[in-house]
Image (cartoon, rainbow, N blue to C red; front, side, top):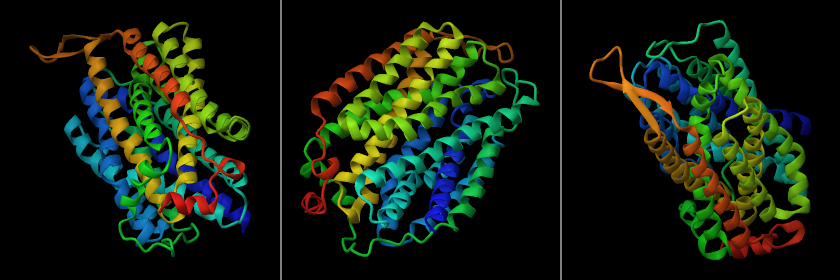
Amino acid sequence: MKVRLRVLLGAMMFLQYAVWGAWTPIFAETIGKRLNASGAEVGAVYGVLWLACIITPFIGGQIVDRLMPSQIYLGIAAFVGAGAAWMMSQQQTAGGIILWMWIWSIAFAPTLGITNTIALHHLSKEGTDSDVRERDFAVIRTAGTVGWIAAGWILGAMLAGKPAAEAGQWRPFEEMQLTAVFGVLLTACAFLLPNTPPTKEARDPWAFLRAFDLFRTVPGFTAFMLISFVVSTEFQFFYTFSAPFLADLGVPEAWLSPTKSVSQMAEIVALAVMLPISMKTLGLRKTLVIGVIAWPLRYFIFAIGQPLWLVVLSLTFHGIGFAFVFVTSQLYVDRVSPPDIRASAQSLLTLVTLGFGNWAGTMFSGWLKDSFTKFVPDPNNPGQTIPGDVNWSAIFLIPGILCILCALGYWLTFREPQGAAGSLGEAELETVGA
């Protein structure tokens, strides 16, 4: 049963991130080329998911904390998302994509925290201490990274047999078709998961409001959330515009997603090996700082822009940073939250980082790209302009500098949770939630 549980939880994570990783690495490049979308339009498309992370997480967290088994909610959301992704693949305007992206994002956004909650819930039932539980969670979460990589390579294989689309040449978006397929598989997986019922101890119908008490009761929590917000804004420069950047450096369209999967390959090593060691020997604060420092190293190499092999190698810093920052943040929130509001507390983290932070980052990065892009006349539409040459060096220097400031902020303000093995005990958790 223990092996079966880990296989199911690993499959859940694999498909959860395959659904996301099928389209995110390359969609900015394909809609930019096939629809001649500007940086602002690309930012708006990507920003829909982050707006959904502002609107929906507390709804999802509240439902699974109080009303519905988590695996049922996950299955329903995955099915709705699969349909929306397929419709998105057929759209021929940025407006049409944004409409269906809203439906996909509203379904998908709450599941980012809910899948973590499902995994941590069943691992905690085994009665192991926090170190063992967090180690097992890191391994299971690694399956999500494998899913992201697999999606990228499958998409690359799908595109390899087709000629690269010319500017303004439309065809259905293969990445969204693949997203729909993974969504159907996630639906099936969700209904095979063991039951994860609402918390029996939960009596407060407004659990999501209690999550805000963490700002008042947990030392350093406010500073942690503010810095995490800024970190998330800079994360979007990579998410949204690394594919067009690599394409400008000469990476073929079919190889964009597989090339970017270098980031997730490094993430596997970071999650499975480096993160558990760092958590145990260095603690949360130093782990966070190391993760944030990895990102400006990558951005400064991007700003140099050559040689190509060094730019591709620098993608590994993204994987290290993602594991050390985002997964560590999730574990930190899990440690300092009372058991009966952990799903809502994870939703609060999602709201601040994947919600407000990432939305602000997509808007900021899109505006900045247009500011450093030379627009040229559209040969097919007299009087109209389309994006031309981009000053990538100027674009990537800015998030690099801001990430260094965030690392300094974590170092000066972050407070380690106290207690055995660096985590809060049950009595302390009750005090935090009081």
